[in-house]
Structures are given as structure tokens and as C-alpha cells.
Image 1 (tube, one colour):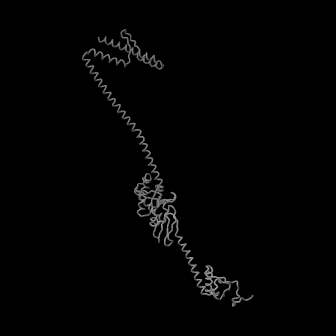
Image 2 (spheres, one colour):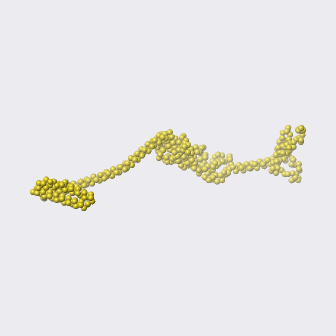
Image 3 (cartoon, one colour):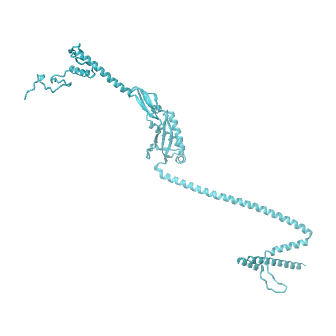
Length: 419
């Protein structure tokens, strides 16, 4: 094997070049020449930006001037300065370009100078001074935001530390509600609040606790939900305005109001008992509404009947009195005639309402005749039942004539006996 000549640099492997590719190699025992490396680097920069003229372009300039180390150093310095200027210009342009930003419709841009509010940016293409001089933040002021209190996403995912509240009658209710709000001042929203969503949730919880604390449990559970939501919304807005939070509350929605789960069964029983009580009360009221008018009507009818009876009795009494007075006057004029007439009228009235038997007392015959009036009435009923109305009418006529005949005979007998 042929030994490697260490003391002959020109016999070193020509394939081993230095870092600039000149191909003359370097000695392993000596460090690289930094001046030579810097000179080669400047030459490359000069050739890149064409600051150094090619040889032969200037006939008056000697050829060996290009090999002057001082000229190479001056040209290298100029090339480096130019490169640095170009790089600085590119960096400055890029830095200035970072100040452009776009604000969408319905949004507001907040420009800050060294972290302090400077001005608002309108929707569109805007420019500010680059960081760290100025910065910006885009806030959506048209979006309706929602914060949930007492639950998250669904009612099953409850937050008992937020939902359990104390009422005025010292009962506990479980309330879940949602608050919808918008931004009315973007700068207040950004600068006056550290954690905006948590701040809104805390204010909403504070307001609803204050409102519920002044109400009864039954009012909160049933008829008072809308009123509680309205009062809580007003109180929230007052708190936000007082702290300059830049929030506008649009609505408060009660998602669920119920007693705690531990007493839910007992509360359901109490509610059922209350419903039964109300049902019975309604049934009793309905019965009263049905009976009372009927009783009032009956009472009014009885009063009218009594009044009619009173008027009738008074009229009859007055008529009887007037008739008696007339009879007295007639009796004073003709006592015998008046007495007979009164007797006959009385007997006629008596015989017309009693059963009569015909007896022949002169011949001594003890045979009793049948009661003609009853026979006549029975025959009249039978004929009417058979549909013979004409026969019934004639029977009544004959009966009337018989009775008149009987009464006339009684009168004659009476007159004879009196004589």
C-alpha cells in the first residue's frame, strides 16, 4: 500500500474540496483560514448582486486590480449592506401587512393601542398599526348568546349548586332557566369583564335567587313562573347597567320548576290531595249553582201563591160580607120570604152533594128504592167506556131532571109540613 504524503499538499486527494468548492484542499493539521472563507463569501455575494464587474469590461483598469484584497473587502461590505437592506425592507413590509384585518357584517372591531382602547373599527377592510403598537379584537354584537343556569345542554344534566333555591316560606325548589342576551357595548364587554360567560351566569343566578326568595313555594311552582321570569330579567338588566357590563338581556325562559327529588313523591301526594280538594269544591259549587236557583224559584213561586191566596181570601171575605149585608137588608123587608128562600137554597146545596133514597111512606111500603144517582152515574161511566158519548149525555140530563124532581118534591113536602 502506497503511503499517503502528509507533507505534500498538492498531492492530497483532489476530490476533497473545501466548503466553498475551490478544490485546493486544506491541511488537517491546520485550521481553516477564516479570512479566506470570508473573502470567498463576499465574492459570492458580489457575483449574486453584480456589484463587481467582470474582467475585461474596463480596458483602463488593470487586470490585477480584481485580485486586490482591499477592493474585495469593500465590495463585499457593500453587497452585505444591500442584502441586509433588502431583507429589512421585506420584513418591514410583512410587519406592516400584519395590520390589515377584516370585520364581518354584524361585528365590531376594537382597536387597542398598547392594550388601551383606541377606537372602533367598522365592518369591512381595516388597517391598524402592527403589533406591538396596536392590536385588535373582533366582537360579534348581533349574535344572541345563551347562558344556562341550573343545567347544561339538557335538563337531565343538572347543576344542583345552581338550581336549588330557598323560597319565602322556607321551602326548597329546583329551578332551571336560560338567559338570552346580546351585546350593546363591545368595549364594556371586552374591558370590564374578565370571564364574560361566567359573569352573566353569576348575575342571572343572583337575580333569580333574590326574586324566588320573596315568593311562596306554590306561587313559584304554578302560577308565578312568568312573573318571576319578568322580574328576574329587569333585575339582571339593572345589575349589568350598574357594572357597565355592556349586556342587553333579551329574555329569561323558565325551563323547569319542581321540588327536590328527595321529596318529590310526598309533594306529588300533597298536590294530588289539593287537586281532589279543588275537585270536590268545584262539584259542591256546581251542585249549589243548580239547587240554589231552583230553591229561589220555588220560594218565589210560593210567595206568589201565598199572595194570590191572600188576595182571594180577602176578596171572598169582602164578597161574603157584602152579600150578608144585602141579605140582612132583604130580611128586614120580608123576613118570612127571605127565611124560606134561604132554607130552600141551603137544602138544594145539601141534596145536590149527598146520596138520595126514594121511599114511599104514604102507602106503608117499606121497600126501599135503589139509589138512583149512583145507578145513573155507573151507567154513565159504562156508556162512556164503550164510547157512547151520546148515551152518557142523555143519562146525565135525566139524572139532572130526577134530582130537580126530587128536590121539588122535597120542597112540597116541606111546605106541607110547615103549613
